[in-house]
Image (cartoon, rainbow, N blue to C red; front, top):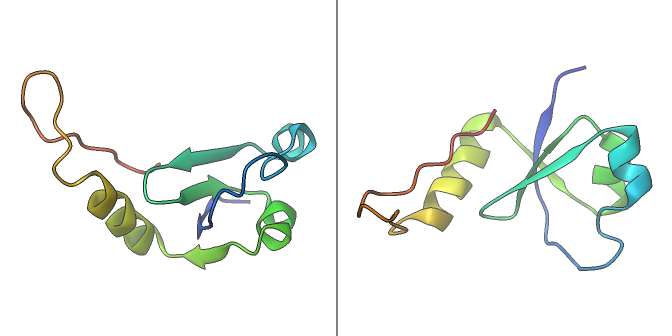
Length: 79
């Protein structure tokens, strides 16, 4: 199964449990974007599935204007 892209608000403790990650790893990115194969987790947290392009646009918008130590725009590319 391929990873899916989701938009979800991290609600704090219990948002991603050890069991969630043990079953299928959940990776977080800027813009409240999450990447995982764990559809049960996505359903539990009411995550909204995104296309990769939609998710990348959310990440890009969230980090716009973020600069690295050399003054270059930070770039985060989703897997």
